[in-house]
Length: 284
Image 1: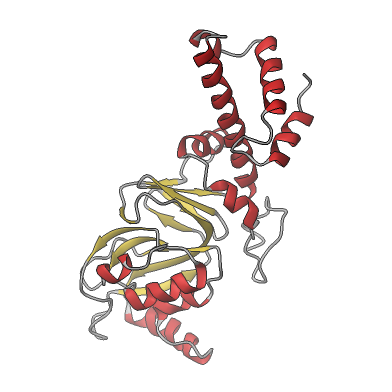
Image 2 (image 1 turned 135 degrees about the vertical axis):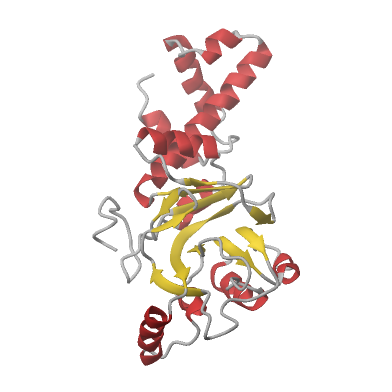
């Protein structure tokens, strides 16, 4: 974990997984995909989005720290070696192993390679366990079952590939899936995900933000949000033209923006401390 996340300089869980602060996760809920995409793209992270999901609670926003699980099509010899090791450690049922690691603020992110018939490893029992441990939902490239039960979990904001009433590995002689990795880099659709990434799910799309970029994404989003509020207000007042606001701002507009921030500091949808930090960094 340390080897694969060397750019993260903050707190970590006992196993080395980056531990993004709860305050940052709270602020991340207001970030749009456009804002996050711009920062990551400029840093060279072009494969951090996964689209085309079925959803539960589509109008809610999913935010949390990724716990990753990677499944592959079943192969008896490999499955048995992994299962035997798990049993020696007192584990039962491979699909529950990643779930046992979850804590509040996590999001279970699983590559189930789109498995459909006889593929579901998440039904209402596992979902209840996930929700109880995390207070969050899932990002799951595979089929879920017990869909009506999952929808009864009010805060279980989730992104999944399909629904099917079957369950994984119904016949021990015909293994359909097997777990081959927990908290390792994994692929979700066209995205590369690392344990500890921030998950941002909204509007049917999921972004996976590397832990070391989360604060920059949030601060950039907050600045954009404030500039948009200021620009729209000044356009309604007729003080500036659309061309002036759409273009690179002049020094006079930038100075006006700083004064506006200071005047409205207690009324804006960005924490007062963050605005004060922004004002300190400005030269106007």
